[in-house]
Length: 366
Image 1 (tube, rainbow, N blue to C red):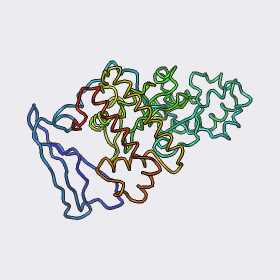
Image 2: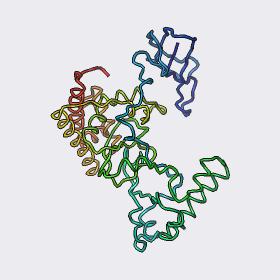
Image 3: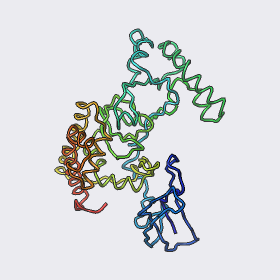
Image 4: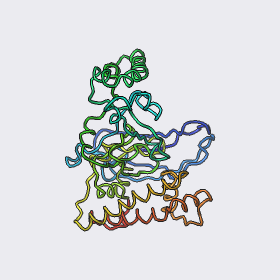
C-alpha cells in the first residue's frame, strides 16, 4: 500500500507546509493499493477530513501505478547537453557597476572579458537584477594577482575569508578544495562551458518553479546553479521543451519542493525522448517557439511591473476554464498588459505541432 502525498495533520497556520508519504511493503512482486488524497479539510483541528481515492496494480518505486517513469534511462543523444549553472560558493564574485570600476576594469586589459552578466531563478521568474559575476575560471592564482591585482584583493578579502571560515567550521574535502582554489567558483561547470562554446544563445529553465517555463538566454550570460541550462540554440528544441508533452513528463519524472515542481536534469532531461519532426514540422515548431520567446521578452520589457510568474499564473487560470470576465482586477491587469491571450494561443499552437511531430493526437490526455 502507498499514499505518496499526504498532509501533515494538526499543523498550525504558521507551520511549514509538510507533506508525507506512507508505504507498506512486502517482499516480492505483488499487486498493491495506491491511495491518493482527493480532498482535505480542517488539517489544524482534532478531526481533520481526508478523503482518499484508490487504484490497484503494481506500485512503482516512485509510488505510481502504470508506466514506470522512474526506470527510464538516460539517452545517449542527450548526453552532455544539460547541466546546472555555476555555483559560486562566495558572494564576493557578484559585483555591481561600482565594484567593476573599483576592480580596475578601465586599467587592466582583459578584465572586462572576465565579468559576465549573471542570472539566477528570481531574475527570470520576477525581474532581472543588473548582476554580474567575476569569472576567473582558467586563471592561476599567480596570474590573477599579477594581471588583476584589484580583483585579487577583492576576492581575497571576501571569498577567501568566507571559505576559510567554512573550512574551519566543517573541514570536509570539498571545503578544503574550495579554499585551495578560492579565486574561482566552487563549481565552475567546465563541461557546460565546453558545450556552450560557439552558441550565441542557449535554453534555460528554473530548477524549482511553480511553472515549467523554458526560454533563451544570451550566450554571454552566466547561469546560476538554480538554473538548468541546455546547450542548444535550436528553436525546435525550445519548442519541444516548452510543450505540454514535456511539461507532463517533467511533472511526473521530477520531484517537488513543497508545492513547487523541481526540474532535475538527470531525471527530466537526460531520459526525455525528443521527436524526429519532418522538415516542415520542424520549421513550424521553430517559428512558434521563436515568437513565443520574443513575445514574453517584449511584454516584460515594456511593462516593468509584470513578471514571468504573473503571466503564467493568469495563463493557468485560462487553461483551467476561466474567461477574462472571471479574472480578478489584478489578474485582468496582467491579462491586458501581458497580452496573455496571445501567450495562450502560442502555447496551444505549439502543443498541436509538437504532438504532431510525435505522431500523437493533440488532445492526448496528460
